[in-house]
Image 1 (cartoon, rainbow, N blue to C red):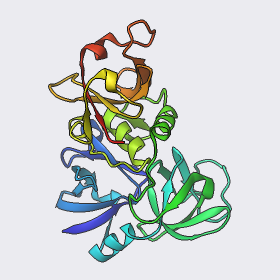
Image 2 (cartoon, helix red, strand yellow; image 1 turned 90 degrees about the vertical axis):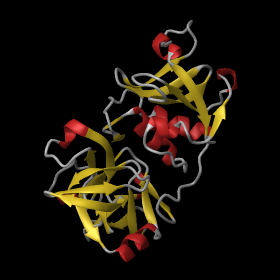
Image 3 (cartoon, one colour; image 1 turned 30 degrees about the vertical axis):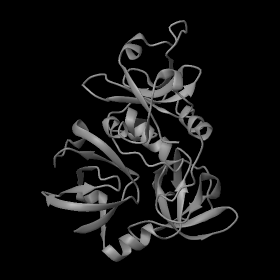
Image 4 (cartoon, rainbow, N blue to C red; image 1 turned 90 degrees about the horizontal axis):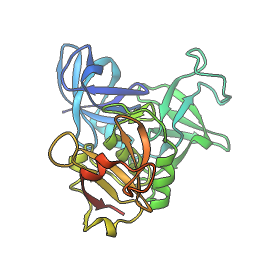
Length: 280
């Protein structure tokens, strides 16, 4: 087995080793995400993410490492990025001067976890997988004890984070604030609240406990629909008062209602409702 880390702000995973990977996006991986390399072909790696999701990325987007460092990295103190987009600066003089390649080390997105080197009252010093050092303003993240060791949130904190992305365009396979698909949106929002979900809607439908009926729904429940195929193929978050938030292919992240008397009622989704799961 070969081990590595994602070396760019984010990369898209394709279903096959091909230069036009964007046409066949399965999912995405963030900067410094620890991965396993399953095989190599023509300058491409088939990788496995921590949620066991697999896909192909260019070998230029990966930094290889030893198993010992890979494991140690995940068990070290990390900075969890909590802002949608963050600039990583080459010095402690972090200022909003724009995303200029001459003044930035790289960028990072919500949910990225970077190895902590040191901290002071204003910045975190972080180490990137390729050995570069950068600095992140403290208001853009907080320290966690190990990879994915994130404090468990509440229904209210899940909903508050989800609402920050209202209006964000839909992107098939997306797991970053550049654009989400329905299950990528769910996975990111819940992960930031200490709850690990699998990648796809049909997988998430197997997690947690079943909710008996719509009358039993509680804030923070995952609600599912059978849309373009049999079984769970779309998912959102129940907000209470018959409303839910989801990343839909037509409007992006939006709030709709189960109540036909409301202006944001979706008859299509009402008819295709499948069920709900509770992970809180």
